[in-house]
Image 1: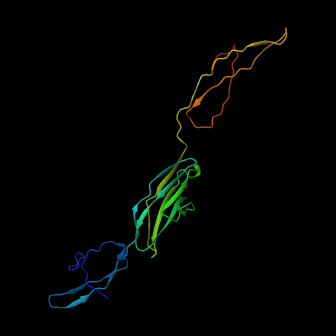
Image 2: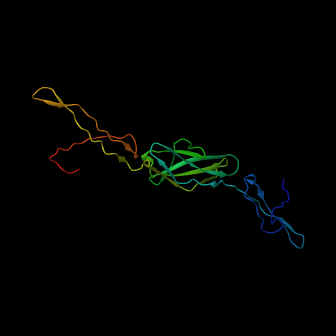
Length: 199
């Protein structure tokens, strides 16, 4: 059943219709009456409300071994569905990562994903769809401070006379302490004979 509209412009040749989801598939027509009293009805037009993103995804930087997320918000008619895609060889491929059919996609801190480009497609139950802006994932190594190492302590060996022909010495320890950088550390001691010079 047709009812008179009270929207802005309803009594002019140009009506203004808000793009609201609850107006999806509303039909509009105009009845025109001339000065002589002749009346004619237009054909109707249908309002289609396609989904629209209210929050676009942002580029994400993920540390190796960690996880990051991409998130979108959208509005539209009825229930909205989401599908995250990534670009490969110029084609958009549906992602199989966790959250790939939700508003929030979880991306891994794996170097194989460094530079991958993503987008999200939101679509409604009427088949209308819209794609988000495309964003890039970068994967980086953990930031580490500079590594420092202390000078080993000087030690003195104590001679022990085993017999009149042979002297031997008690074992001694040298230690370094390390701070900063990224654990675990690896160590390699080196020695230099008295006749050598250099580092």
